[in-house]
Image 1 (cartoon, rainbow, N blue to C red):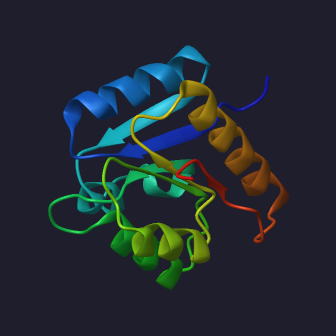
Image 2 (image 1 turned 180 degrees about the vertical axis):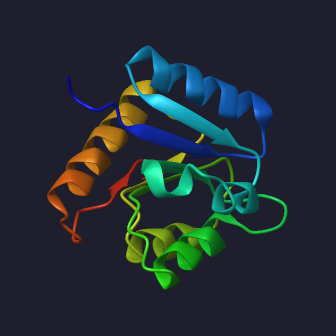
Length: 137
């Protein structure tokens, strides 16, 4: 039996975290939800995460800061950013730093699931270069 991938969700909005968790579970993924970047970094799930769905704006460490922290510690976790309000500069920075996708809320389930599937393909192959998905245009 194939191993089920762990999708970690980091969003300070509890309702968003729950909705994303429900969607991921409905298609067979294991999930872990965290209310902050710090909580995720201190979790046992950090090393098992196959894909990270990450909000940009959060109290404390931002999503972009978490992305930089993971890169600095040489952790190669594919990241899908989600945001309700983000300047173009932040979106460009996230994608340039290797994010798989940057989705603006509200986004479609298909867009998110497509990004997750892409990220898991990248994770399995070990490829580091990928065309970032972007639905903000």
